Length: 262
Image 1: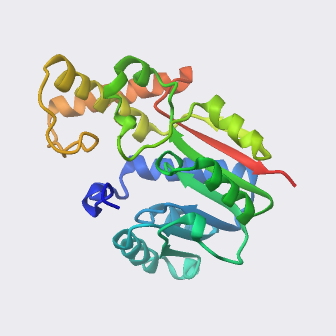
Image 2: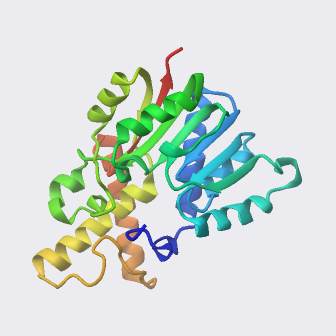
């Protein structure tokens, strides 16, 4: 937990970009499975659980940070009466050690697999807790992205020492095939992560590469920045660039939906 202090998540929340991401993730699930029992591994502060409950899912979240689980359950408590009881979050230090008799219609890993020491073992565990025909949704950084190729060691999503593995769509497909999953769809449309990856990678390349500034504090954590006309223009440009990389299939992140074979 030394590399995951609670302040690392202080800027997370229900931003417009995050809400759009949850909407797209839920739409991806809905294309392949009707609402049922959902397990979100690495649920953070629970916004996806709340969004899923509002769409009719019975959402259960696991998270290593007790502080984030507390925030998640506080948000769940504020759900409308018709969604009460449809979501819950619990602290779980290790998904592999988690024990439950429940089986789920869907399991989601939203930027989790790159953090774990054995992605294969996590996926095997997910297969065991899925019902036959259940779906698996995975979002991860894209090793084949344009910004990774362009910015190399300054790529935001390298994020050492937290990110232990990286995937391209092809390598993740191979791993899922080997574990008897059927690939249903692969998409690049997380505008929040994709624009941040381009913007922050370029900033780091300029600051630490071209200008040779010393690294201050954790390299992977960028300080908050005040809004300005320049910042707004940079944000707008990064969103346009992110859209282009998504269309070309070289965005910073991608999402795969797969089905456990019957």
